[in-house]
Image 1 (cartoon, rainbow, N blue to C red):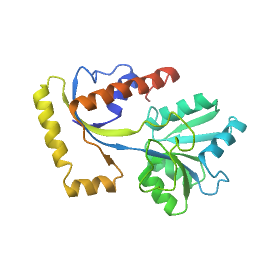
Image 2 (spheres, one colour; image 1 turned 90 degrees about the horizontal axis):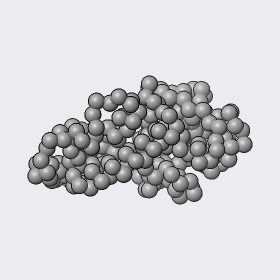
Image 3 (cartoon, helix red, strand yellow; image 1 turned 135 degrees about the vertical axis):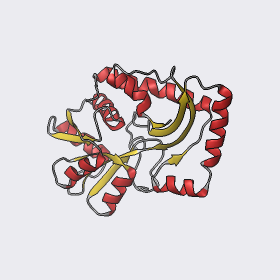
Image 4 (cartoon, rainbow, N blue to C red; image 1 turned 180 degrees about the vertical axis):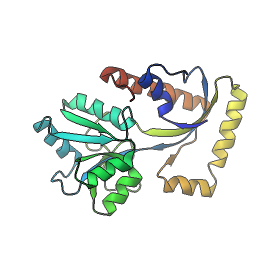
Length: 233
């Protein structure tokens, strides 16, 4: 199964999921990671992410941000940020990032989280200003945009990922063989080029490494979902 971060978020979000990702699935390999960027309209007087947080703090209830869905990584990370900084900031969920961006461009909402690719395209067009990106590394296509951590804002280091999992009954021998073969295929120039185009940072892990990462992130996402009582709609 080719999947993403949502496979470990869904059980907590839905409450009645029919699977346990750690009992019913076997990690094969994490293929790559993806960060997201927080961007606002170019016309906004806000110049950086610190300025944005100070403005929101000074004007409670007057600001809103968009995400690409209830329970999405963007929603969960921002709720954690709101909690840490005591922000009164309204969440507006969209069914995907494209309609969210359309409303930003139409001046219906101030800003929100978008893929690096979309944020970079609209910034190049002069429509939005990317203020910060999640994760530990700067974006290759938004090189002037700092990470949240570089801007002095902790708790936004987690990024999304794509990965391959198999049935929970898969033997360790087969899991290792699949991981090896997939990671070798990932080195093909055409696949590397396509991932670069999609702004996916290639990783490639062993089943054991992927399993440890999934368990660590399960604690993060489940903690946020439980703390703020977020349920998928």
